[in-house]
Length: 366
Ligand SMILES: *Cc1c(COP(=O)(O)O)cnc(C)c1O
Image (cartoon, rainbow, N blue to C red; front, side, top):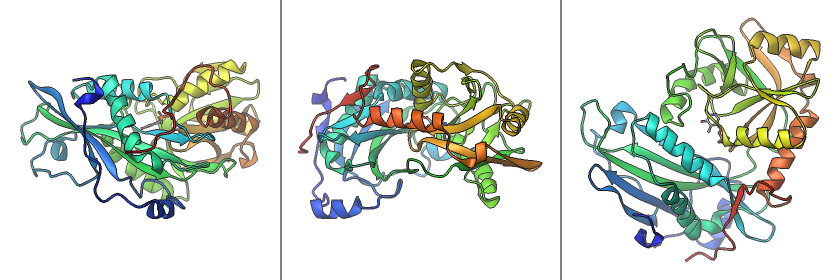
């Protein structure tokens, strides 16, 4: 299947009124409230992708022996729809999410979804729920995901899957100019190892990172930063964000791909920084160097980035053996200017020379 005619559209009979929606959008937080509809497709061995539906959001019926509940074949994506000043709706590099989704699928022995179907699914949801994209600095967070639902306890790739897209309005996650984060370096737990699933966006990676996040919170830190699994030395990334280091000579360093998740924000920041004349190096950077450079002043800024939070400064790093501060904990000028550049492109306030934005026009809803 491929064309949009294959989607069966059944608008919800119980969608919220404009007034109810407006009050839900006042302070949506993150990931707590959801729009009226969802998109689902099914895959089975032999028939491939079929049964594309746009319909009221509702619980799944699941057999207790569904494969995902036992062996964890589950992957997801996260992207945002932004409301532009002219009322139109924009997606940021959704083709990259579609491609990464398929790389994750391949790693987890799940079926690939044609990129056009991924994007059509997201656009169908926006067609019905476009009114949920907030005005101003908020956004509508879109969550495509896929899981194995074959009823079978044998260990092998499942032969039935569900793909689904849901959406959740989000306030400005971390306010622009918000205070810098304090990170906890996990000396005990790693997120990913060579040959593992670190580069796949799968729920299991998050499950394995939560205990370290709990320890970070217990130490008064905002997020965990993970080191490599082999040497416990090289800085990799956070549980859900990539990391950058800005040096005094203007060089910007970010850990290389491999065991980290290839963030689309990471890639965009690399391109933006290069276009502004910074030398960006994808290279390993050790926790020892991070500390020594922060203390000596050779390191000027560190920031982390991802779709949910955009770009956020790191102000302090703590670990069992001590802590260090970065540039008096104030968000630095490079962090701030890259954040502004990215947000301005996403929100249509600045030109988009690399054609990253896919604008849907003013959608009236059905
Ligand atoms: C999703 C994710 C990121 C950020 O990726 P973006 O495409 O920039 O949103 C970084 N690290 C992990 C582990 C992730 O799951």
